Length: 495
Image (tube, rainbow, N blue to C red; front, side):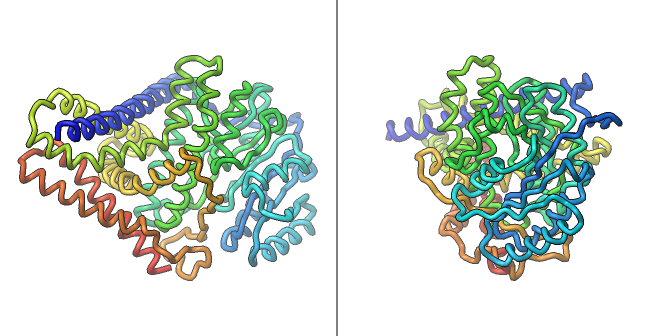
């Protein structure tokens, strides 16, 4: 029993320690962001002068079976306020359904209006999105490449708000913009996603950028310099997050990523739990694959220690889910050890201190939420329930995401799984009948339902032992797994 208790407490404390250190890195990004904002050093949009020499820009739209949103995307980029003779649009279409005909008709419509827009088809889907982007890059005319996923609806001034920033420094290889949300108010799930993404784009991206640390192209709503892509080795399909991979390879070659949060590109958020899970799977597994591939190179590179510190936790951020699963599953046995064993008090006290990591994450998200232009008390009243629900769902997705991370770390390869797009903007819209929605429930969903019961039992043991130190954690866990289980089943049944 002694050794079993030692193993449990060591794993529990070790996982909490990683969460604590990760949270410290996020807290430092808050400091960098607030400092830059206080000193008015966050980048601003620049007006284009009358003598501006417009470069040739290629807009790349990598799409695969986007029946419901592709026309909306093409119309949006076709309306860009940029000289027609300096604009090329590539619809990089790997579709194998009716999307092909829709794109062909829409492309033909804009070609008749004098736009240089091409419907680019490959022989096969080799390399998925990365393969399509690399194929398009090799045949493109542009000096710069703006990339948009199918769920985006960029505004007409997007290129005018991004391209001029490349003139500041010839080593700027990417200009990344902030994502907007066209369906944020659709449901609780879209509100929570917007909440989390806003914090990423306001705090993380600004903090890393103004602090001079590595950041990432977000896969869409950004512009690449062709020379940067070529020098970094081009788009690669050996990870599921080709954007993070190329971002780090470029920065290791001394290219810069310029981030501007004032420029916003609206997009549709996934509204169904199945779509959220597929997106989270790709992001977390891909991040794990990139960390395995590039973290050793980052640590060996001649970079400042602070940059290595932030890059390490940036690349390992998906590993947080493995640590969450470890601390969650072991928290119930720890409750028993706390109350039925003796001699472990020092280790238990240390592990309790490391729970502060979750407090640091709340501070991190509060600073992203502070961007809302409302009074303090109204802001606080909105923040508390949203933060509670965000943490719950975040924890509820941990077993799903930890599985993806584990697969990435052990090198298990899986195809690029697209996030189904629904064209859901208002509350009257629905994904019912959407042909891309998977109507099969993953066995992992059953485990999520079981875990909600497991942590409800943890709540019962807290009252039995009259030990409430882990009570908030178990409330969040039981509710989170219950919500993820419920929404997965409910959304699948109504597909």
